[in-house]
Length: 398
Image (cartoon, rainbow, N blue to C red; front, side, top):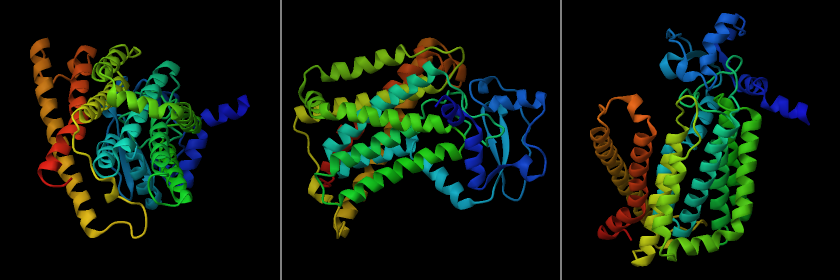
């Protein structure tokens, strides 16, 4: 068993998966060995995880004929060749399903167009799962796959540790939470919902191998942790949901607890984006939770769940137009509020702590990063659940 776990934790299975999908380092394609010299190993080690932000500068020389450049912190660069563009675009798209662009669109869409209770439970599960996953990375401190032999397509997260894969955790939690909550409320075949949840989570998990960001064990571990949390929390969902909507202490607890968790995030010897990402997630969840409570207290307008029925015929043209109108108007409002709050909060913090707004190092300090991210994204969560529905009602979309 230990030998199997050691193999799954290694870089070679990831590299073999990439080669089988048509992704190769440029050095292999050119007929040269992919194994670097001892000096080269130190230089390219900057692309391998914890030391990324201390990497030396690298020269970027573009190659024609399908060779692409992966660019990371302080010039960390890797050349690679794509031989199968179907897998390339499939897994790049699948990887985006675990990024902010997906969360900031799909979760509000669910709230505006499908069902409030489904959205509430997905957001709570997403917040819990992501916090546990991010903290686990910085406690376990398992490195990401080595490059070489792995090709790394994403460089933003090379400064983070690998175990567990939070993409795998979020994809498993969101897809199966959605399936569990809708299978008895909407008319669609059980097999269809189960298959959709499985395919969604599987694609995201495989994308982490294809992009070279996680080992096989990272991905399996992330999916299993999320599944265990789902089974553990499912019996308490109704009770937690009731308390979130009715308890007079909900706004206070939903704000203070995430803030305390963010300020007491595990400390590392170098800067990692995990604290900022965790603060973003907990901030959005806190803002949305306060919005849920406020809507329930003041009987805010509710969306008609009958508009969305997973059956044939799926959607009428009128319902489709209303859903799209809600979505695009809501996303526009969210993006505007996010940009406004970013500028406002960062300006206030830079004035208070006496640093230029463009000073990246100052913005990474906990006393700046935590309130900056938390206030900005709690405003986004609150806007999605309170301000946007009021605007929808004003425009006659409810």
